[in-house]
Length: 364
Image 1: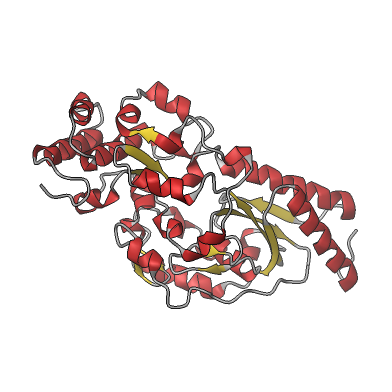
Image 2: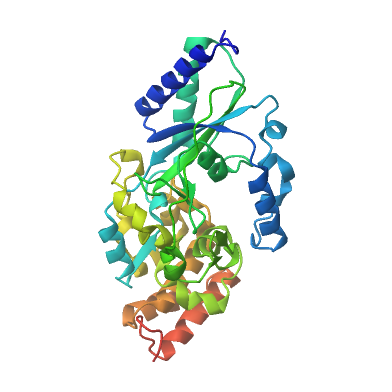
């Protein structure tokens, strides 16, 4: 058994975990204290302002989100880990955004769903610890429970929360996933880092829908990630032209963040693009039947909006695409879709093309 009273032993154990984290593919590791009451207060204010939209699960668990011991009794530390996922150069991403007939998909979703992969990696790490010290109290998380992963990762010294509300690491940028292990091991905590956003407002300025309504405040109801993934209803009409060709999520606040000049493309094959979705044609994707959609999204986060949500999103992107016979034919083919939501978005897109809208300025 581990010795709670031995500082040297706990320091050595921290070193062992750090080495194992590198072995199992994690880019960084830190130990956080679990007092994030200030983050909990900010969350409550955010929820009171209805910035969460229809994501009711954000408020279901109450204080368990920011009081770790209420979620997992006995927890005194959070072991926080990041795993890089950047699948291609940022120049390639910008090229896709600048090609209006192509579909832009948030780069975290191009490979396999990270949840299971990262959770298995964390469990392997736990098993390594057990091999050394014997059983201990723990629970593994990868966006799988009411855990405020970014404030905890900041407490663990893995970065700071930027004005876009994502975690930024000074040496790695922000193209990474975060995972946690809640534990009863009283390991020495890591030192947090300072906020290095300074006076920069690039993420706020480039947000297509102006979803970052103030530094460090995101109104999810305007965020393209929410609108195209979490939202199960219609996308508000005023926001549709601003979405451009983004059919699943949005990376702009990361893509144009100066700190991401330090990010590197991952060599992990799990996160590499599949089915050529990093450079896919809107018309072709819109033509997929449900079986085709299921085939290219198997084992992927792209399943989250469902087939109707997928068609809704692409209909909006086609409405924003340059006018062409192929675009009109594709939209017309879905005019009688069984989903009323899809039909409404198709009708909107066709109406836009009646005026031959230009993709660059959305004007006739």
